[in-house]
Length: 455
Image (tube, rainbow, N blue to C red):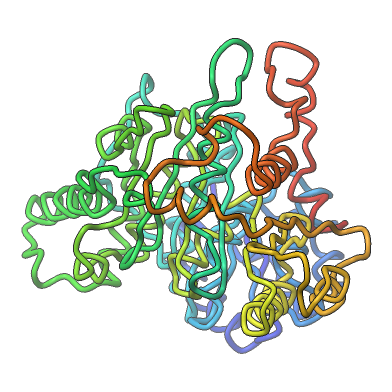
C-alpha cells in the first residue's frame, strides 16, 4: 500500500518537481503541497497523510513545528529536507525523531524511508542524510535494544568555546564524582568520552593508556564497511566520503561494541573512551563515524555518559552538543572567554536550542574579579533566576592536574571540590539515584524535549 506524503516547503518549485518525479512511484503518493503553516495544518486535518516532508518554512523552526504536528497527529513520520548549510543541525533533528535528507531531494530517498516506515511504523530512529537501503550489519535480539526503548541515563557534554578554561579538568572531576554515587546499592556506571579528537588529554589527566581508543573503533567500523563493499564487487578505494555515509546508514552497533574500546580507571571504576594517540588519526574520523558511535552510546548500559569536547565548533563538537541532555558551558571570568560564550549562546538560540539544557560554569573564580556573576549573567542575557556555577581558584587544582590524582578521590574538603559537588548535584539530583523507589517515577517524568522547546 502506498504511503501518503504531504510536502511542506516554501520552495513550491522544488516541491512540484518532486511531485512529478513521484507520480509513478509504487511506494509514495503525494497527497498535498503546502507553502504556509496554516495550509499544512488544514491539510493534515483533511487528507491525513502518513509522511510529512518538511522543507524551509520561515514562519517556524522545523523542530518545534514537527513536535506540534506530532502532538496533534501521533501517527505521522517526518523527514527534514535540508540544504547543505542546514546539515550542521542534523543531530538536533535526529534527536527529535526526524529523518534527514539533503536537497535536492531524490525520489529514491523518500521511497526508502517510506518502505522503512511501512515495515516498522513505530521506529523513530532517523537515518543520516542521503539515506539509502544497504544492509551491512544486523543486530541480534539479545544484544540490541528495541526501537523506542528508553534506558535511564544522563548524557552530559562539557564544552568551553575557549581553550585553557579547565574544561577537561571539570569533565574529569564530574565523571569521578558521579562514579562514586550510588543507584540503589550499586555505584553508578559512568563513561567519559574524550571527543577532543586531535588534542584530547583526558587519558593523560588520569594516567591512563591511550590504546584502545576512538580511532581503534573507527578502524573497525571501516573494516566492516570495506568488507561489505568487497562483497558487492566494489573497490573500497574508489568509494567517496558521501557514498560511505550512505552505506553507514545501515550499520548497527551494539552496546557490546563499546566495551572493546574502553579503558578503566581502577581507583574509581570510571570507564573512558579516549581520543586518538596520533593527531593525524583525527583527520580520518568522519561525520558518519561519529554518528554511529554516538548512537551506540545512547544504547549503552552506562548510567551517565560525560563527553569532553574541543574548544571549537567542528562537526564533532556540534554533534556532542545536540547529543546531550545537559551541557556544562565552561569559561573563565576574563573578556575573551566571556565573549566566546556569549557568541556561542547566541548561535544556539538562533538554532532554537533548548536553553534549559545549559548550565554555565565560571572556573578559577577569585575573590575580586573585574566582572561579577550578575554582570556576566546580564551579558549572557540569562534569566535572573538562572544560576551560574562558580568554581573558585584553588591551589590544589594544579597539583591534582599534574599528578593525575582527581580531587574527588582525595580526603578532606577544598573550596573547588565543594563547588564541583554542587554542580554535580544540580546535574544529577539526589532523588533520581534510587531507581527502585519513588525516584523511578521522577526519572520518567523528567522534562521532555517537547516541554524544553515550548518552555
